Length: 470
Image 1 (cartoon, helix red, strand yellow):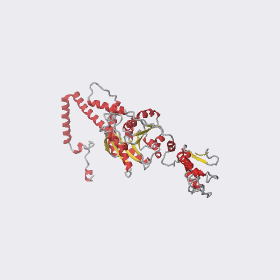
Image 2 (spheres, rainbow, N blue to C red):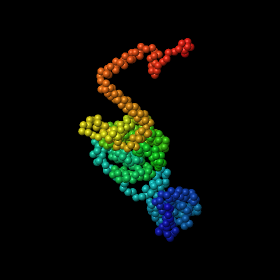
Image 3 (spheres, rainbow, N blue to C red):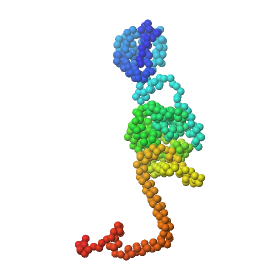
Image 4 (cartoon, one colour):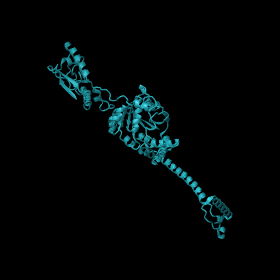
């Protein structure tokens, strides 16, 4: 808002002092535009800037200008009146003092499309202490992990935003905060405010406010089933145009195609899969596998490549086994490892197995498998099946293998039952009788033996059929 106030020191002479109020961001753009166009529109392009107005007086030459406000080299309002007013020696020092004071008070900020909508209001407000608190869970993590906290170098620290602050999102955020990274999080539920505050994470329930913070890296920690909806409705245009997008889903080919189809081309894409979760990785991450595929990284920009390496270094510092692999190879191998593990664990969990006093190590392993798989939601298991095209083939192969094993058991059981029913001698007699019948069958003519495939009796051909060659 551009306000004009009559200066108390120059009220008698008709001089005015201009004050530019940029408190309102909506009006600041129009103010800047008027200031930039002021000189050309009013015909004073050749005049020197008036105090507080970089491009000349917005209303042209004043009818009765005060000498202390007149410029030194050119006439005030020269474009319209052509007069030249000299500065009085007595008022020169006063004019310079007022000019310096007005310059310190009036600061014109030119809007840039790359800045957030509330940039000016934030920059003009009095700076306060940051709301982000130091990590409060370092002691807790040190107790639950056999690894001492590993902090990242100052140059490699990132501003990481997590979309989806559920169990897995909080699991990753703790390690990132512990390494010294600035972590933001967003989710639809308001219940995570206290959890985020205790972890030292800035929480935003509005995804638009989250994007306005301009994180360097955005990590998608949503469920597999809701990923497409979240990505389709995400405000990518509010982020920086070279933001790195990372997904940590348990399937890889589906999010890869989704991000390539939806995300603007200026964004980098990194598909990853930590092959562990809050249960299997609650202690140390040493030797735990971490798969990643640099789907689209701007290798021309050294900054983008360094940023991607710094994010991967988060898991490398924790001791993970880094495995570069394509998304297609991951899904093919995961169908034979991860999906089978979850399937067996849920089948055994449905049997409600319990611990006993005579547990073997193998049985304890099965109980641990049930705990690790059944603690995950069924939505995750369904996502592993639905969004991995290799899962159906694996499930059918498991079913066929189970049928063959079951048949082998029952066949052997039936033989034992027959021996008990008919006795060993009867079994031997029946065996010799069957052998004799087979020998007699072989001595009979070919046409009496029947077809060797369907065992149907073949009739002899007539003389007419033999003469006709049929």
